[in-house]
Length: 213
View: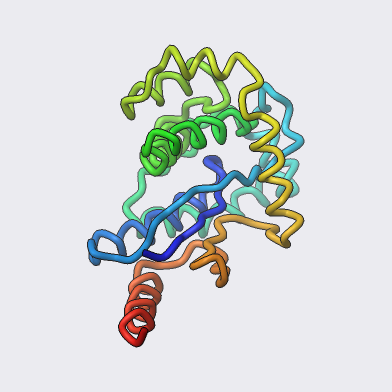
């Protein structure tokens, strides 16, 4: 098996699109060689704990309403091509994602990490839910067969907070500046939302290397 480490943030639309491209390739090649692990990278590590109004956030980030519209035009196009239900009008809050990353970490312990990532993307981009809210996160946990009461109790504590922050900081120290970033076999970094075709090619090349010994 080949390790595929993925640095991502559940409020990053390109991360969702990139996951869709990878998922399509893995569905086409079910005997792929990848063992996948998701890692935390906050787009907004300084975001207030309660998040902020999404419109205000986007206009500040992209220089006004028109700038935000221009920035999201290619995102909407790629999401439609990938068959993703991107309902931007329903998103009211840009959250701090530290707790969402804690949920992804705990889901990984139970072998449900990718399910957690998928559920968080759907909750945020399709359903417009505030994935910084503890009740929302507990409900998402319940939906992927985790114990919601345990998750809610953990979220109310400092469990793994420092670990997630340390891992996020380590990625930045290693030179990661944007997500998604895919790291193949702990050696080759593949940045950006790649297509299904690119991943099919990568899997083919890995199979050839394995066959050659």
